[in-house]
Image (cartoon, rainbow, N blue to C red; front, top):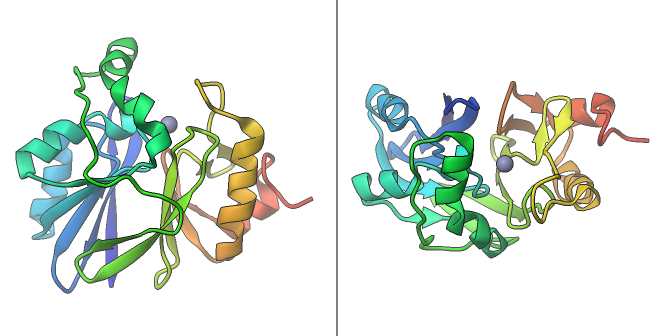
Length: 212
Ligand SMILES: [Zn+2]
């Protein structure tokens, strides 16, 4: 079965997640924005072997520690979708602008696209391309546990910002309604910031994407 632990990182309290296969104890880190020692503590506490980095998108608070973590543990990087390359290339400028530790660019070992599958140990997650917050944003979904890791697409009671370069409000709302809602009201999701929720709760009460 897939297990997970949320690790808020950086001054933006971004919900980095360590997810793992409890049969093999192999783990992936989703969105390592910073604070590598906090991530390492989860690995040690749960006796995990880190095998890869997964990225939803390339904003600094989600991807800032990717190059260092990848080097330190010799890990492949999977994601985001190729349209986020300009954000990866801009990581040094993003870190300077937001007062983060100097971030380095990197080249993902695998760009993801809609319909792809990623593995963690013996567990598999589905990839959904959900543009709008960034053009190359992806969401990871584990069907057996009905868990989604949605980055900055959707929050408990809100949605991602669309005022950054190549963000688009209508595209984001369409991504949520056409890609996420069909997965089911009973899907729990880890948002990029703040508390968890379910798709059903957001369909009922989220002012940006609730059912009409
Ligand atoms: Zn973001």
